[in-house]
Image (cartoon, rainbow, N blue to C red):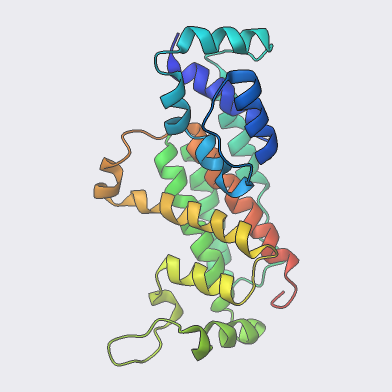
Length: 249
């Protein structure tokens, strides 16, 4: 049996599990012995193709039997079902009531449409890259919205938080910041309702967006619907977190 079918079946089964549920399922039902944490922040790795592939290679028949006994469906169509879920998530993303400058809001909507199209055509790398750009566009759109977000602009430029500067020591304009710098500052000023968890999710998107660089792509030979599902889920959670934080809305 194709390893990817087994991997997809496991990923689909644990998709909405928390850390403890994943740990219990792997250890008690599948017999994995190296799930050392129950923390949700690390579960994306334990749900990844890389982690599952290491356990499945050479044990395909044994794991397949366990999944069948647990009534977990093994199907070539699972990828298509996951694509439908990802596309639906992207279509449901609502960036209101975030105070995003109009031209940025318009651009974000176009990027969301492109991300949906790429997902439906199984261009997972393209979707992942667009998710990073959408998150960057949201933060920049809020920062560039003039008086409506003057408090946010002031916070991002607070010298105690060491915003990025050019060689002359002058603080860079927001559009010249790297995505990592924008995300770090968003974390410092408290734009997340759960700093630890949402910072980790933002880093997942940031690192995935780095696959736009060819040298980064060389380190990962292929991208899957699960990679896309994780990035889109992180984006949803961060947007919801921004909305909950009323200081700038």
